Length: 382
Ligand SMILES: Cc1ncc(COP(=O)(O)O)c(C=O)c1O
Image (tube, rainbow, N blue to C red; front, side, top):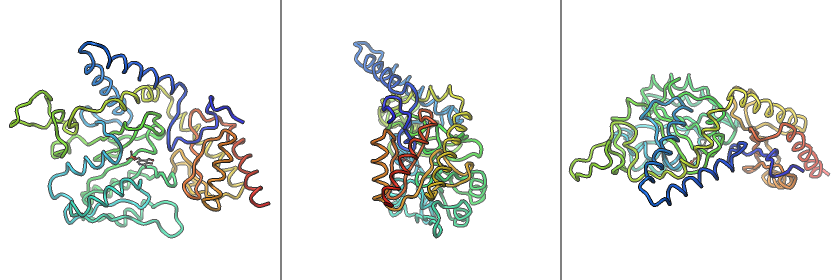
C-alpha cells in the first residue's frame, strides 16, 4: 500500500492538482496573509493588491496575455457570466451562441439561463452516435454567420479530448463570431498561447493542473475588444482611479480593470501564487512528456484488461487525463473504493473511471493500481 504522505498514488489532477511542497507553500502564503492583514498599520492593501497583481502577472505569463488584459474572477462560470453581461446591448439578440454537448455543464447551465433574457438561441452541437466527444468538424459544420459567440473547450472534462484550435478559430473568424476558450483542463500542463491563434477571451480556474486553489479563476479578454465592453457589475475598482468618488463622473478603466467592480477578493489569488510560481520554474515539455508516458502505460494496461478507452488514443488529441469505461456505475464506484483502500486516488463519473497522473504521481504506481484493478475485475467475474 502506498503512503498517503508521498502522494505517489495520486491520479486526480483533473480535479485538484498537487506539486511537491504544495502544503508548505500554501501554509506560508496563508501565514503571510494573516500577519499582513492583522498588522496594526496601513500596509494591508499594498500587500494584498500587490500579491493579487502577482497572481495576474503569473497567469499572464502562463497564457501570453499582455498587460491590462487579464483579471480575477471566482470561477469559470462567473467569468463567462461577467463577459456576456458586458457585451454591447443586443449583440446576441436573434443570434446563436454555439457550444458543444461536452462543454463543462456549469457553463451550459449559465448559457441556457441567459438565452431567454438576452434573446439568443443556445445551439448545442451534439455528440455523434457512439462518440465520446464532439469532433471539431461537427462543431464547424454547425458554425454559421449567425453565431455571435462560440465557446470552445480546449480539453473536455468528460473524455479528455483536446481540440486543434487553429482550424476552429480560422473558421470562427470567417463567420465573424466572438471566440472564447475554456482552458481549465489544459492550463498548467499543455501549452496555450492566447495570441496564437488569437482568441477573444479565455477562461480558467487555478485548482487543477495549475495546482492552486478554488476561487482563483481568470478572465482574459483581447485588448482591442475591451473598450467595447461595459461590465454590468461596475464599481469603484472598475475605474482607472478607484478613489474617484464623484457620483456623476463614473468612468470605466481603459483596460480589463473595468471588470473589477467592488473591492477585489484577493485571498484565493494570493493562495494560488505559490503554485503559479512553482509552475513558472518547471520544465513544462518534460512535465508533459512524463504525463504522456504514464498515460501510455495506463492505456497499455487497460488494453490488456480489455477496458474500453473513453479518451482519444492519439496523445496529440488528448489532455493529461485518460478515461476508462467500466461495465457500469456500480462497478466504477466499487473500483474507486478498492483503489482508495490501497492508497490510489482516482474518481469516477457514472461508469467512467478518470485517471490523471501528474508530477507527484509515481510511475510505478500505475503497475500497483492496475494490479488492484485486475484483481477487482476478476472478483466480479468469479
Ligand atoms: C472544462 C472545465 N471547465 C470549467 C470547470 C470549472 O468551472 P467552474 O470554475 O465554473 O466551477 C471545470 C471543472 O472541472 C472543467 O473541467
